[in-house]
Image (cartoon, rainbow, N blue to C red):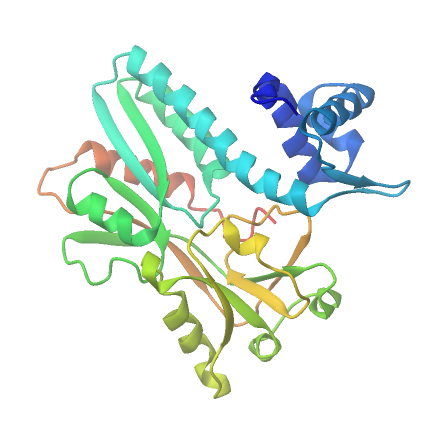
Length: 311
């Protein structure tokens, strides 16, 4: 591949690559991208030829990403989402929005597919609002809120409890999920128990990134009288799925885990557990601020949704 030749890829090609990784089926991926199956196949082959990298293993039954393809999928998915957010932000600036609201989302959470429809509806009703969304790890989100660089945080239970200036109420509740390779023996079960977790090596976020996953796991395992077997620490939540290499390794998360659509992962509900996504903001004495107006409508929009509804 010649230097910068990959810059000739169109956004349509990248979208087609992401769709094929998620569906593992040419027909379904082509339908999502509004192209023919032959066009999709030709564009994917063109990407592979240009990069000099095999992205998929193909046979008569299915198509599966190679390790290189998996890695490219994880990185491009994040970049593509940021591109969509940037375009939306540019439109808002051009339209001269006068009520900016900045929303910070835990970088381990993939809630944008559910959040974007609400934002679009909200802005149709309130066209003078400007909504900006970004991702960051939880400790940094709290710092940005304290510095008034962030108005709203969507985060997991526990983060921010020590900060008295932060108001927090539940947005979504649901059982925890265990994510693992499809070859893991647990995939033969329809639902898991806490006892099933004892045999698994957990992959978690590093405590240096402000994560409380270690303490959370210990509290969850306490009724079993054992310590969680934590095998790998990673800095970025998106790297959790990439680091699963063995059948006895797993990730404990919820239904909006950033790796929920990884084609090589399976998942099951862990019975008797609960995960909570909180909406957090700085309290104000205003009768009803722009932030409170947004939160009120967001709570109403999500009132009937569950953490596992998207599975």
